[in-house]
Length: 84
Image (cartoon, rainbow, N blue to C red; front, side):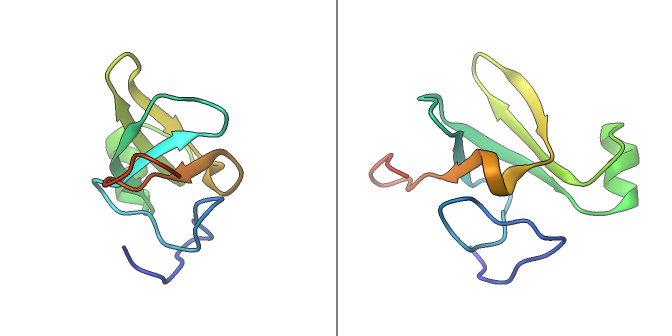
């Protein structure tokens, strides 16, 4: 993980820039999702058919989920412990 922030993206519990493969969870939810893509360019917005920057997440029961407000919603999960 990189401590640099880009486009204002940072997890609510860690001041790091999101990367593909990060494990995350929405606040107050138990399900862990994986960052599938960091949508931080016009090209990626067009590829995913979204109107603004954000993250594309993937989870077992959810499939693909787009979120734009990661600063307030998402916690970074430690892969070793499963804790935020």
